[in-house]
Amino acid sequence: MADGNFLLSGYYDSEIYFDETTESWRIGLTTDSELYAVANISTRSPPLGNICFTPSAELGGPDLIVNINPCDDDTDFNCQDGSCIPIEKRWLLYTEGEKSKVGIQLPCPFIRCDSSVDCQDGSDEFVCDLIQVPHTYLPYVPAPPPRSSMPGERSNVSLGVDVQAVLYISEVRGTIDIQFELSLTWKDPRVTFLNLKEELYMNTVGREERKKIWQPIVIFLNTKNRLGSAVCLYP
Image (tube, rainbow, N blue to C red):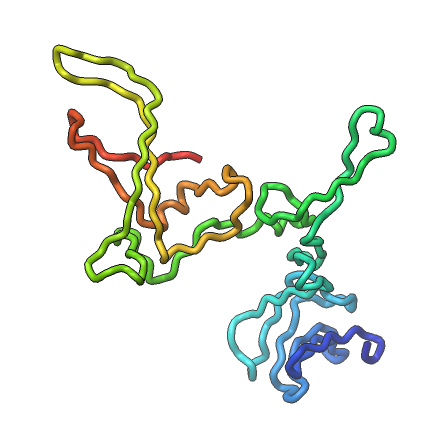
């Protein structure tokens, strides 16, 4: 504390302090008093969570969003409101039958983006994209082969067919109508996956995210209208 107010010191000559003259919180350098940014709050209480700081004229630049929290980077997830959620495990009260009065505590790991809100502000469920691609990614260009491949070699696409039902067989026309599910598997080194879960069903890529990446198309030459493969439209 300094002059009765909280003082937050950074690693490299930076600090967050309450300025008595302007009655506002500031973030600045201890080596240059002209370079600072002012928070958009006026309370003397220590700021917590996402705080917007407006740079001084000398510092310039856009507003800064700083998350101030007491969390441990190694063991906690910091919510946007400044609260902390243990990463290793949280404790849920489990009751069943005669043990309902006593209760049993079971460990449950904290998982971000699992459709279960843990932070009071719900920020553990913010920005839950599963796919990240670079700005140079071209979704209409096929996935490149591994770097160890020979010149001119192309990426492999594995195809699987699961016949679900035989609907009709015509011996006269020599045709067969079947219902099947087509699966395609390939590797795209340009794509980075985020927020993956152990349960595979929670890793389903949504429709909008699928538009970000290249997807192979299969043309069935032996069908009546040379049908092409269709990307699933769910969820």
